[in-house]
Length: 490
Ligand code: G6P
Image 1 (cartoon, rainbow, N blue to C red):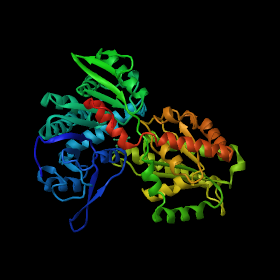
Image 2: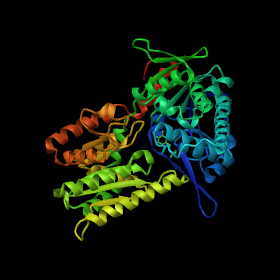
Image 3: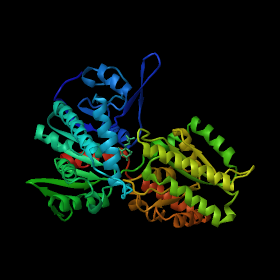
Image 4: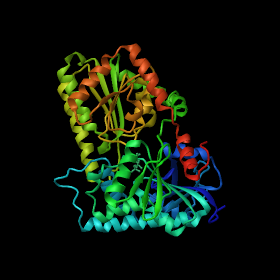
């Protein structure tokens, strides 16, 4: 039943739990996505009073949203896993400018330190228009949430796509308890300040419209409050034992930290199903009895895949004993191909991979196996085979792959991990930490990982798996909710 002002718990995120494809004959089929948020939200089950508000991301999504009563996919009979889902049909150009322009090409770049500063960013007239679209996109969410939320409801707004929504929602519904969660890193103040002044202020005051803004690690929370101090002149307080608070224009926002871990139970079960088994056999055939270095990423600029490949090349050049003895399984799945810079990055990954195979490969040994098409069971098969996991992002909010591989690997793996990933704060004791820009150091860490005695590797891997499983997504979600509503953690 679709009712308004009846939801007690609301989640808002750009990408929702369901996406649609349109067949040639026009029929729509839905697909349920994975990821931490989807799993986390499953903690509240199919509570009728919980609603997830998300955006239509494609034309097929738009059609599905337009056909559903008030955008409610569940009410239209689509499989949403029992979840009440409202998909917002935001016009294509507004969405494009907000998502590709502001969220992915600007805020994502700022928080991951991705700009090539002599040439970009350049905040010109086109950006001004994109920013106006970003405001409209956030308003669409705020209006929908305001229409749907019951008196005093809890609203959990997710990520940099929706930085303005907390304030816009508070203007519409001051009675609500509003939380914002950032899944990304947060930029240091000197870097953040490259945003146009008004934009830098609006993003911060938008998020401070929440009662509570939360981050994956203390480091990102500290960077956020530092930006509030430097850019807004806000007052930051650190009460002993409590959340940090930011006081600005008479409002107080608490700033919290909730780490997110892997769903170990699900992964272990999923990794032993027959579809993973058949892919494992095929991969083993290709790798033979050689050692395996595994990486699995979206082909995302922040994941630093190119430097990872350069480190592998350096390893093979400087440590010839590994030639013919190791295979690097590198899965780099498509991401954000609407943006030219992502397409170019994908091409660079392929080019360097080809160069490495040409330089070292022969009839009996292919040093690098690259796959660019997403295949979850094949990723799990690679996880199971990993002797070494390579996770070297330039910067990452958390990075769940670093937690997942030790959980799934059959014999235990050594983890080479960027010190700039949020996960490093939790895994530092047993990972081999590297500076992601330092190709030589990364190559040396790969060598150390490959030569680690089996017993040490298994022991470290066991501890990494335990740390990686310590904060399952359901707990992450319930802790946030409890901290927002003031209830005891579930
Ligand atoms: C990663 C980040 C999230 C972000 C998501 C968006 O998972 O950790 O912070 O929301 O990417 O990806 P998308 O493919 O929807 O642009």
